[in-house]
Image 1 (cartoon, rainbow, N blue to C red):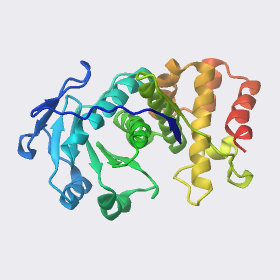
Image 2: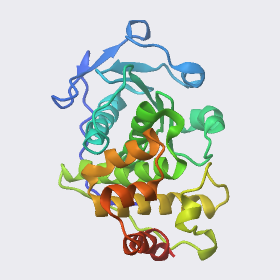
Image 3: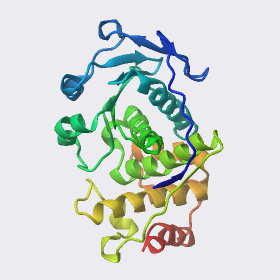
Length: 287
């Protein structure tokens, strides 16, 4: 991914709080024992224990943050809160009753601890229940892209648990995550772009094969193809029905167990021609 960026990040932080937008409120710095929620689960405990330096903690109304350098708190929280707020535009209001913990993890701790729990084994950020782990990167563009992707996974998990089909989960995270990342840079009049190479024909699935996937495929070519095709399919569906209708589509498929294509025919009068167009976008055009 290539970002056309001129970065001007203000990482200044006050002694007790760092200000975000009025929507999120300030990130209140806190000692561990004063946090309102300290239930980080088994993996979270391992990450905190494995940290090479003492952790700094902070929280807002929606999240608890854990960083190893206090100077990272403001930027991390701003990106997370923005993505969480934007996600509601596409998925509806959050139904969360508990706060999510966000960890900014050093490369060493990531390799020693987080990588073992990564079901994909190639992630640069990971959502696991109500925890999000983000690999600390030297490139500020990385977190701008990774964080909204994981926020979408989080929102889907909050609303539908394990009932979200893999292609739908990954497709929404890819499509909406990228859309939110672009929006985040545009507010600073910066452009975020990427160039996606063509996929090998042998790695590309048909629509029926793609939407029947039950677990993440392995292999150097098949996994990227699955992510790309899932994202392109969701983007194509959103272009047809409108991004504002995606929440209803997700509810029907993940919440009610409807077949995705059946729902599109019944609710939006999709014809064979429409499905042929979806195939062109998610299968033919990626090769």
